[in-house]
Image (cartoon, rainbow, N blue to C red; front, side, top):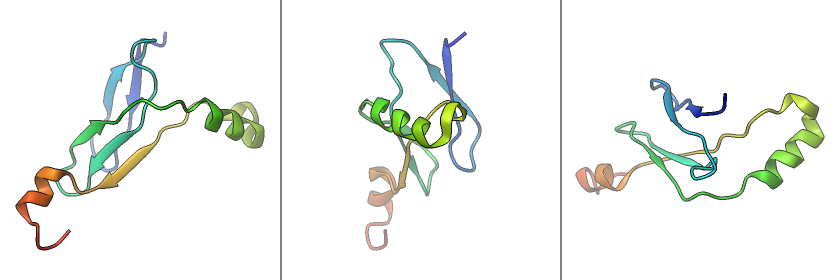
Length: 82
């Protein structure tokens, strides 16, 4: 029904978030150390979706962007090695 959106972070349980006009698709950041998933600023993925659909046809249903790295909390715990 389009009420929730499924998020599949690497090596973690599945997460769900609201999917409505006030909560558009957006990228996520996942910490490689603690596994925390954070929502990032919303950006329009329409252009990317359109380009992928040109290549893949109607088989491209959704685009999910996940940025991986070390979160500030984990960086503060071990600043000597990131």
